[in-house]
Length: 296
Image 1: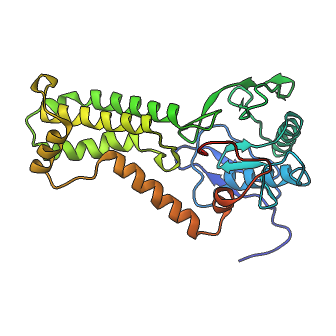
Image 2: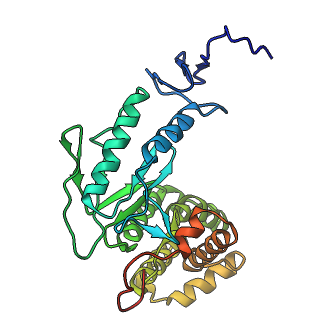
Image 3: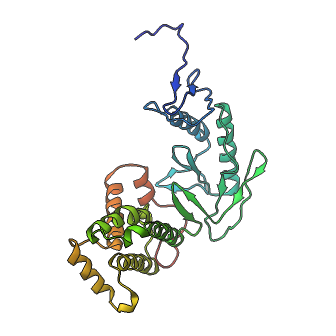
């Protein structure tokens, strides 16, 4: 490998999906992009965002009275690729973090989309916040989709579960010709588990299950199984009888609700055994008192 100082620090990266050539000049100072592309094994875009986030957090994520402290460790952002979630304990702190992120991105030739950026307040005492990005006010929302999951300001999973059930129902309806076909029930059941149930259970590891949400999940599965078995409600068969018919056609299957609970426990064990930020957030404590009743 040649290490001559005369060789410029420019890395050409050709897109795997087109003829776009990307350049990373002088240690990630600028990043130009004219078309969609895949990052390849080098992942330069993710590396640039990591560098920007570190520059953004330098000196601006110190513990304060309103910071989110988990075991005295301040947490002011969550990042997954280019999906960045800034966390602050007050409107002023969030504005500072936003301004720093915008400034750091511009220094690397990138811009943060103000149209795609949203603000959500999760508090019992404050329900409003005014945050600007390049003098443009950001939209205040009560819920928004992050990494495919719908987050609500009250921290509950009710809206997310209803949304997943609606999406799974739409997928089930689109496959109506398959359910009405003459293929075996065993094949239909496998297609249902792989093409429909997987849509409903996406991100279920983080759900907060309530009695109402559990009933909705069970009702959805029972309704789908009746469709697969071509059982009408006029037949007056109980859900237990429908389950017995399913077992008669295929091997005993885990109910959908049991699958959700099992995946929640598996994820909890995975996080608990791994010494990571996820464990710190899950088991850490924050300032303030616990309110009465069951905690979300």
